[in-house]
Length: 80
Image (cartoon, rainbow, N blue to C red; front, side):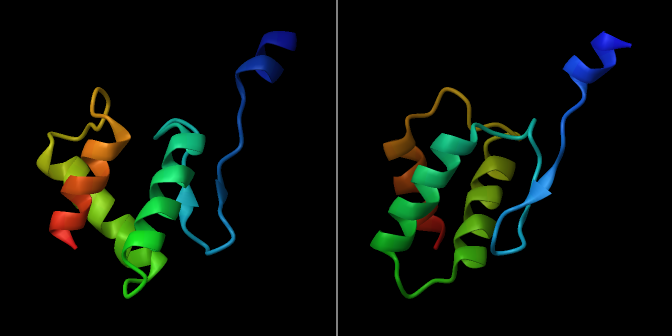
């Protein structure tokens, strides 16, 4: 009974309504990345920035692990 409580998690949507899976990414790093990209590219919406990050993940064979945030920021900026 107790182990079920320990392993269950909730998925949610952030305030913009974008679905965030608890398994998909480090939320702190993702939030920082999106905030940095929004400051760098105010002409793009948050959704457009998230889509560009998802495109980078697709290009990078489904993962962004191992890339520095600054590298992800540069590559995402190139996509935008």
